[in-house]
Length: 595
Image (cartoon, rainbow, N blue to C red):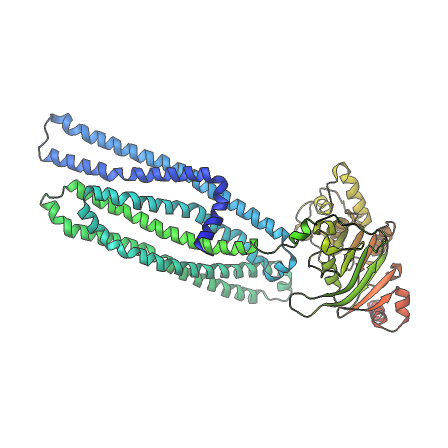
């Protein structure tokens, strides 16, 4: 990412606070402008002291003492002014950088909400967390301290050499000559810092991704007694992270020694060429002392410029990683967000129809091949088949998590490619295999599934959903404000499954899709749930490995290696040889062995 594009993006985030930034920069310039005066005050102080000690001053005690008093007062006022300006620029500039970082995090999080699952298949969660924390902070440093030290260095470079020239052009050239090589060193070190910081950030992402996965799967790690193995792997990643940071620190440490060496060389040159002039009286001692003070002050702008380069390169590398995420294609194509005209549904067509669906993840082999499936309004349809036969992929395509090929999936006769994702998802409620509950109240978890605000009917929606999910108050107090632990840690597997069912029931969508959602629920509770759903006129598509209640369904589709191997009612399929009867007999045998 080039310099112009980087600055343009950074300015876009600072733009709402440009007045505060401008005030901060002005206050910073005030500090720098005042920094010119102390060496001049000191020069006058020394020159006046020389006149006093040489007894060349007439006028008595007050003529000798009053200038010292006034110069001391001026020095104190300059220091107070610098302190006030420093406080102001810190308030304006640093606060603006924090607000800009907040906007970046908001944009980043908002983007993550709109990205498709295929994006998360390619990016570990730990990597995304690192972007939201470490990388955003690096960008903030570029916007705040980076801008600050850069403006400080530029302004001081603009004002200090002219002030030195005003005192003595000859001494200025002598003292600044050793600094001619500094820009070349900065240019070389800048590229080195950029490359090494990108490696550090990449390693940090690996480290956080590993830690996140290990903590999330800590039960598996403990069950297989793999704690020490994980510690060794984490230690290896940590050592690589330290090694890369040390290499980065070496690159960053180039700046300060070079700057101090160049200023020291300038001071040595000044002593060598001007020392005899001071002794001979050709250069006033006050001028010489002012020069040395100005040279001391030049150390900071050069160091500040090195810091600015470091902050910029770190911010640039982090911004590049963040922009890559912000530039990702979202899960709703622009054409689908605002269709040219509202779709006209055919009420006589099936509620859902799949025609010749073939689908593959990326460039892999197709996981679905020529799938045909139909669900009429009010029908119950089941999908069964071995593990890996493509059942869950169908659910992902129906809910828009992955784009279905045009002309293969229809809702009431309309191609789903012509519907917005919002419109599609309002028509169905999906309960996935994995039960995910948020660390919030029971009510917040259940009402999350509501298509729109429930308003005054919230309690009615909530109670009805719990009843249909067989969450009976006799087991425990299922109240709206009941706290739910992270991922439902304070609930059993069956209770977590029923809460996610309640979240789907509260939507009252025309089609309910259960992706093996009843596998953690005992048979009697499953029967109660299905019985209560039967009172509803909505359609049901259920993926299941339980065959006991398939007689309730109008039609059963059997998938094998991504293809529809059989279709018909449960009774019909059980009478003919085929995969369905094999799976049924296998389950009956397992049930006998279990009892």
